[in-house]
Amino acid sequence: MRIDFHHQLNPLFDATRSTMVDNRYATALVIACVLSILATVYLSVAIGTQHWYQYSSPAVRGEANASEMRSLYEEFIDGEFDEKTYSDTLFRLNGTVGLWWRCVHVPANAHWYKEPDVRMVLECRSFTLPQQFIPKYKEPGNHNSGEDMVRTYLWRCQFLLPLVSLGLVVLAGLIGFCACLCQSLTPTLGIGVLHLLAGICTLATVCCYLAGMDLLHRVSMLPDKVDGSLGWSLYLALISSPLHMMAAALLVWAARSHSQNYYRMTAYRVA
View 1 (tube, helix red, strand yellow):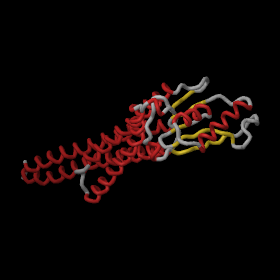
View 2 (cartoon, helix red, strand yellow):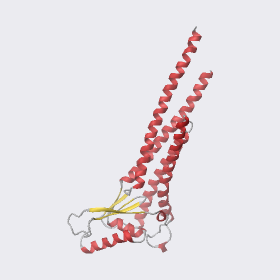
View 3 (tube, helix red, strand yellow):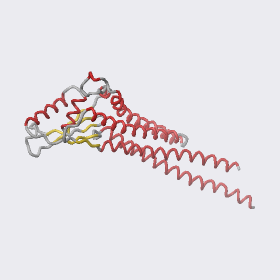
View 4 (cartoon, one colour):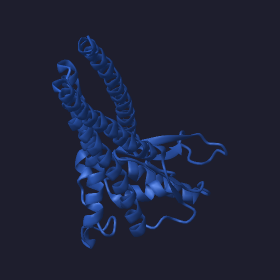
């Protein structure tokens, strides 16, 4: 009778243990999905906005200074693309620059700085795809100074790496969707690795951007009383990196724990 009672309880113990384990995995997967969605949204917003780096310049005083600023603005809007030209304009007109956009603050009306409390608006121009691949020079604006390979490839990496990161997350999402349809946890480890790579790419994007801006300021000195600071878009990208990595850690844990538990349950049942 004792043996029969023991055999009757075995299925109950197996079912209870399996339910507890499944709940742990489900919780980890749900949290990982939430973290992944948040990270992807943050990174997408960061890529599409221009507040990665911003400059604070003093107010324009005098008609001569206003004429100079107006000339810089017109060159910024209608002139040919040139790193020195748009950089000088960003320095002098409270500019902001991102991965795809460069913007300046200008008066809303046509009369520049003739009102005491003039309303400022943000005027933006995008970096086109060919412009993203234009080489950087050791002296910005001087094509005879030779190409600066470090700045050139830092710029290209900061443009390409976030796209790679989003692509990895999209691929992970497609694999996860197929895994849900098949009701399988087998691809979870691969999905976690993809999220880890996405987090690394995002972190590398921020590092490349900061390094590129630092090198730019070394070859193009900021004017007097002009300060630069990091913008909220860069912080969004910086936050998205650990979120992707935390999602990766949960996914890898769920995959490894499920695999170990499966083999233990199989061995227990055989025994």
